[in-house]
Image 1: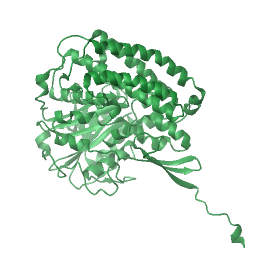
Image 2: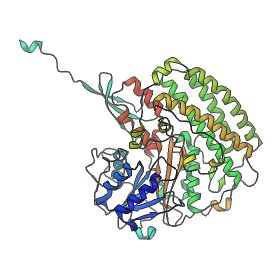
Image 3: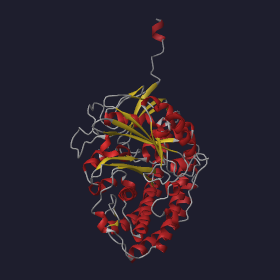
Image 4: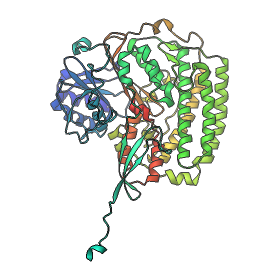
Length: 157
Length: 373
């Protein structure tokens, strides 16, 4: 059984059937997308790690009503990229995943400086790409010139 | 009196600032090394000197306006990034591409991969003290730049691929010069092997140096030749075949130990595999249109998101695009391979000597502006 099938089963039993959607056609470049509550985030990433996945990248999205962190995970097998999403309200912090994947150390530093999302328990919360004294969050939609600032439902609704 | 003979207080660990403009590091990489004698206790890469805000720019420009940005992230494999961005948007917006364009793009992308590996080869051997191979490599690379310059109009930051094809057709001269380049390059390949791969000093500087284990690779998200040197045949061209890579028969070279020598061998062998792809693509290149030009002017992907992964010269690269249904992306995130490849150094460099650090940094092949974006 391929890693991705094992993982989908595990996610379903952990987060519930509704939270996991599977796309065998690989239309959006991912085989499945799951939504996790912030409380179960570290646990879910731990399951990914134990199943043989690595953290490919993570980033955040800024909406008027909420912010969202998107984790892309992949393993060394064909067509098995998966998305794990977690909704975080503005000004709400999330637990760090750097204890699970070391790669999250830098990635979380980047998300923190560009979006202002705090990661609880991060071992080294300095700026990564921006200057040390930068007190702005450039990728937030209220910074600088932006084309549109939307609510989450306008795109994913 | 006893105080006179007390040993002076000596700080055992001191900090050395390597870079950002040190002749033996690449680009603007600055590494703060905590040293105990000549041994590295802790390595802390300080990055961000080349941050230009490409992701923010992506949100304020249409897909077409963002096209020139793509090749400026990793300027050594610009055409691969340009190609990847075009493929991502084409898949997102459902744009058809003529067969001929697919072959032209594949040939040019693989040429760019060879030129990137050649530059790495030259500078890496120069880092280790060998000056001659650098001149040979740059001579070969110059031929590729000339070929690509003639079709695309630029030497480094290409915007040759367009949504729905390429901006200019290739002619018989392109095919001829590419074929003669391949012939010439293959004869030079043996010189490289004899000059460098069998050189005793080179082997001593690379064998068993900077070993990356599979477990470390997974922890840090290491991809590309650095991962393949650990023995895992993981290449996006095979794992998630895009464009027309599934039509060619090529191998994924892998190493066994994951040390600097394996990484060197994998990259050298990859150049030969790229030659095979180019050769077959030139043989089979069909006629017909080279650009579905009508599609290029109304790029408006549907609401939603896409992640498109492809293999650049340094590893697994990806564009994560979120669309709100307008010609402007709502979010344009780029996954860059050098990110994980540099991050793993914080662990690999621990316990090695400064001289080996130079060898390891070179063998990893990082492009810093790609990380900074």
